[in-house]
Length: 158
Picture 1: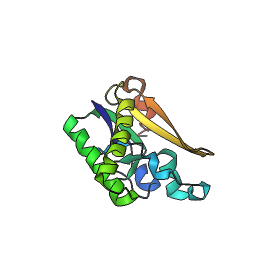
Picture 2: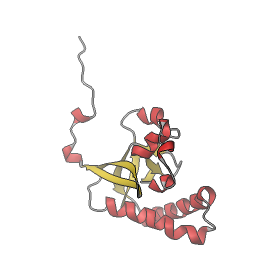
Picture 3: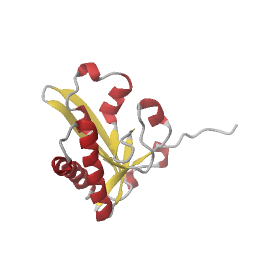
Picture 4: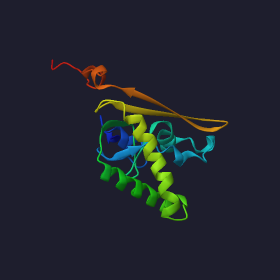
């Protein structure tokens, strides 16, 4: 079974998100957070979270990148409970019985995106707001297609 963890290629998440996720936290898209947003909400750091932020399931912060890795069934079940509790505490779900199926659906969606990809595949999310609501698209950068030049800054010691 696979899911994704937040990663940090640099410190930019600290500058672009109000609440950046720590590296290594399990993550999902988290697009539900923006379901009632309008154009007026899309400015500053909230706009960045909307545009391309993954939602961590531990600190509930945002990250620009996640990478696919294996997860145990027990850890997966713990995350469902954790997200369900977040729905009750922060989104008005009436109780855990109502929140667990929704949390499971969110994690199952993420798990299905990750399952057919190699470990360490990078995922990026992009969101737009249109007449029907929030539209999400996802990009995958497989480990073998990423080169050091994509992430490293080269210079001269002279």
